[in-house]
Length: 489
Image (tube, one colour):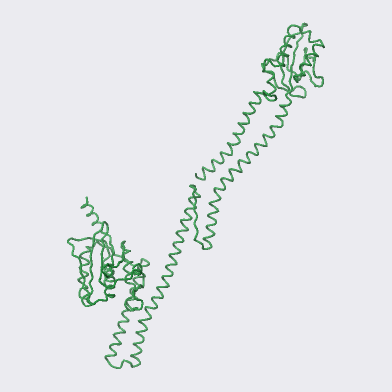
């Protein structure tokens, strides 16, 4: 549930809860007013509503007396008997003749003519009103004396218990409503604030940990609202930041390692160059033949340093993606065949023989010619460099896949230790670290960068029969894919 809906529902609950309580209290008051209150059956009206009640019988007798023999209302004995009956019922009687009080059963009540209803007022039920200093339920019967004077009989029952109840109940009701408003507000505010403040607290704690450099924690929220989404997004950002920091540390470590390797790889040939130059200068190489050998060595070392610098420059450009690529559609079969023809004599001089599986037809791929030439050169001459046999054999094959073309280059050399297989494409990798002049250690790393820039993969594996097989993939050109789809269709 969203925060907007949650706040709306909580505010609605704060309003509706007291309203429901008020309706319930009104229902109770309805029961009190219309069904009575004050005795086992319910209240000050019940005595009037029951036909067989003593008070009703007294009232009926008074009506009969007033109608048939109104003069009897002057008799003290009759009035005393009537008063005794009414006192048992906790009721009183008032007899009025014209505007004067003829008889009043309770002399302690202070009543004036203005306290009583006028002659001729009709009511099917007793009226609740203030009479004198008290609140009473009154029943009125009007008649005429024999002298034609207007007469009224008032039978009254005290409703003081109800009045006391009302006076004490409504302050309690008012205070209860205030407490209900406060309690409802506190409960709903606590619930809503807890659901809001908890993710805010998580975010605050997470931000504090990140500020202190601690990224090794995890936070998650199951709430589907906006803050829950924010917490999960924050944790996702933390994870990405952690990955970027680890990658940065890895790059920093690789940079330091590369600087150390460069220093070592440059120092060794330069030291040799300096040694041979000093030998010539000091006259160690006196003969022309010796000087020629020294200069040949110096030239070889200088070429190695120059090649190392070129490869470092190339690798750096590939690593930061600053080297431009010129992609074009090329027939991979014809391309590899032409390259092998170009290096045929060089391979023969090194005792290597290359075989290429002839395949009828052609297969077009999208690639940069010069960069793929560099990949083939690095892989093939890496095999030549580590060949430990008098005659080495290279086997190149091309296989078609769904969206790619796979090129495999295998040799019959010593292969690579299984532990070293995952690292041979790392920078400055050498199977024999002591052979610092055997190569820069960047050839396969450069090949890996070039293939990845082409959107392909490169990997290596030892052959069961011995030797190493390096494989890489190149994407088919769009035209080739469309032609293949048409053929499949």
